[in-house]
Length: 608
Image (cartoon, rainbow, N blue to C red; front, side):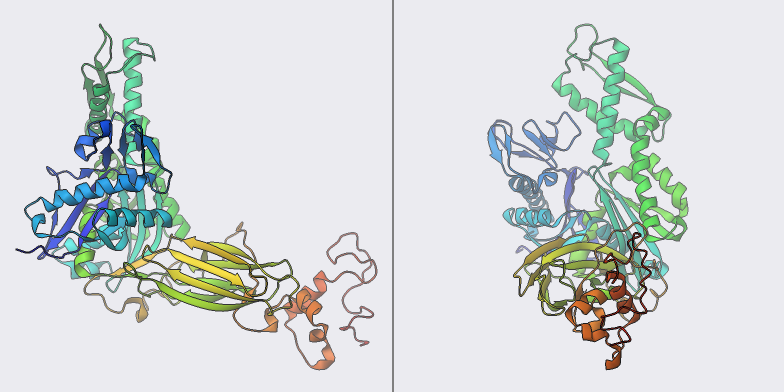
């Protein structure tokens, strides 16, 4: 049988990696002895080993370079080369080794031998930066695979949860209009995605991610505490030597203790021999559930606390969440599950049965359904007088591999006085294209562009190029026509939507989003923002009053019949110096009471 060109789902995880494919109406996950493949590569003695053999060489739970072994080379993407075993090693090449190992493993299986596995839908953490995404794509290509589409890991897990069900349509109807939180806690990262199900669309409302509380940090903290207690019990010095192979065994025992102590009151961590000591070589430490709470309870609280901060930031309570979908290796720890139950109630918490493969399975379904990502929220440019210009509208289809979505905008600088054009690119908190002017906005980036400070309003023209590339990164490039200034920026933390096979037109025609989400002013108290001085049309009312007065005093002459907005009159008079003492109008030393009703020799004076 010729090899089939089927797009696979690929979860290149911080700790483990695996691939899945949809065959017929079910997912096949390519596990190695029922386990995912460790994301570890070793270069010991010039020999490259990947996966389980490489992981067996580790003596620490930490990520990165450990001697001649690298755990999770994904975390090194974007950094310089490393000297490992006397040879310069490129992080992209390290990642390639892991990806190629997974690919070859799949192709050697009974199902995989009929697959080409040259095209994949790859998942990424929500906080993965644009340059690292591009390098990851490069590593995939070097390993013989092209990335058709990147998908955020929690979004893929939610898509897989719905598609794996025997009653997908019933689930979509059940959660229609409701909020769903995906809690993905793995060995390296914690990712959170708050979604709303809308007529078959899975719409990201907000994302959050961190690598400060990954499961590997738990293992490291537990191992260090066990070793410290053992040394104290045996009366050994801190400089006692440990057998290298024993540290690997201790790491495994601590992983078991982390799971067992969540359900049992006591658990003994035992490694013999452990120390290079004649009389006291055995590590034998009994831990209680309270001990585990003391050691890792703070990490759990930090992780679960991010849920509360995310919901608070978006203006929701835990009661607003209809479903908390828990995935990742850490949710196997009952202590974590118990904390989720406390927040949402056991009836609304669903722990994925196949937590290790949930993300890869979801990516496989995305590939099978050819589901396209769409922009979940408008991308807007703040203009003068706090109006907004939509640059991209929610619902537009995101580019696939080697595609790009481009737009160009011609703008004016209404106030070039300080020599800068000020760009504030924002996104509404409310998903969908229907956004109110006073809806809250989230700043995406700010840019300062050099302009001609001597130019009159609207004379300095500005061009803005915008694009979203295959890595789902928003690229902004602006330049001024007179000053020839140029500035660029990138934004990677965007929100997206995925459509299930039975999805309708979603928010385009549905009113279900009306009244949902945060509203109120565009900024919160304490926010520091730059006042935009850009406009997309020539309109004198957008120019600050004092600037307009300097450019054209006749604009304010009353006998001409012109009626400038009051705000411009106020701005002109506020910044105009006192005609008697010359001080600014807000200077407390000005006691001249010159007022604004009569200022001799001024064009706006009644005597003119």
